[in-house]
Structures are given as C-alpha cells and as structure tokens.
Length: 167
Ligand code: HEC
Image (tube, rainbow, N blue to C red; front, side, top):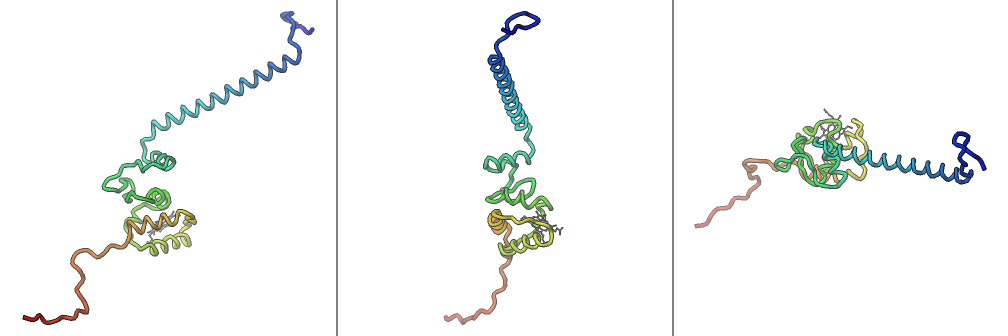
C-alpha cells in the first residue's frame, strides 16, 4: 500500500483518489454556479431598486407586458407628449430614436398618409423595415394623429336650393 511520505499514513487507493478529485471538482463547480446565481439575483435586485428613470421603467413594463409606468398626464406621456394608448410603446420606441416625438405631434395624416411618411423615411432616411409592428404603428398614428375636422364656424353652405316659406 502507498503511504504519504510526510505523514506516513496509508494513501487511499487510486480509485478513491479519483473519486475524491471528482467530488472536489464537482463541489467547486456547484459553488461557482451558486455564486454566479446569487450575484445575478443581487445585481437584479439592486438594479431594480435604482430604476427610477423612465427608460428602465418602461423597458421593464415592456418586458412584463404591463401598462406604461412613466408619468402620464391627461392621457399623454409626460416625456414624449405622445398619447398613451394601444401601440404607444411601439411607436415611442420605434419613432423617437432619430428625431424627437415633436415631429410626430406636429403632423396629422390619415393612415395612408402616415404610411407614405414611413415609406419616405425608409427610402431616404434609413428607417428600417417595421415588419409586423407596422400595422400597430399605423393604427396608433391614424387613431391619435389623424387630420382634424375644421374647428370653429362651420363652412358656408354651398349649392343650397332655397325654397319659399308658405304662410
Ligand atoms: C432611422 C431614423 C428615423 C426613424 C427611426 C424615424 N424617422 Fe421620422 N424622420 C427621420 C428623418 C431623418 C426625418 C427628417 C427630419 C427633418 O426633416 O428634420 C424624419 C421626418 C419625419 C416626419 C416629418 C416628415 C415631413 O414630411 O416633414 C415625420 C412625421 C416622421 N418622421 C415620423 C416618424 C414616425 C411616425 C416614425 C416611427 C415609425 C419615425 N418617424 C421614425 C428619420 C427617422
């Protein structure tokens, strides 16, 4: 039997040594995995705690499919001024990257009109293919930023056939 030269104690046989090595490596690996997991959880908890900024908040709300959690006043997102409604998140994330939302708020188009603007941006301004988001974007824009009916006095009546009142 082999002996440890220092202690003179009998060494375990090679099979047992292999087994111990395996166990040791396995345990080390497990500890590592647990540490990484704990680290991730700790990071996420801290990160969540500091997520007061609107951006993080709505990335989360998008991921969780929850309602937008930014500040909304009169149905509008305080940051972009966009109406918060169906499709708002997609429009906000897709359409405010290159220019401010003001450029949307300043405009009123029909659904076809918005489609033309999008095509124009795609052809000339490097806007990407909106893929399956396009219908939702167009629905949103057409619903909230459609041409308004003229305000104030009605238009003068035209082509009226006047008739005499009888007594
Ligand atoms: C890849 C960049 C980019 C993205 C993303 C983008 N746009 Fe634009 N858009 C532009 C540029 C550039 C202009 C021209 C800006 C200017 O004239 O100052 C523009 C102009 C516009 C205009 C004004 C067009 C006109 O006739 O004056 C509107 C409206 C508009 N964008 C709406 C949108 C909407 C809605 C989205 C989301 C679907 C969007 N944009 C996303 C680049 C982009």
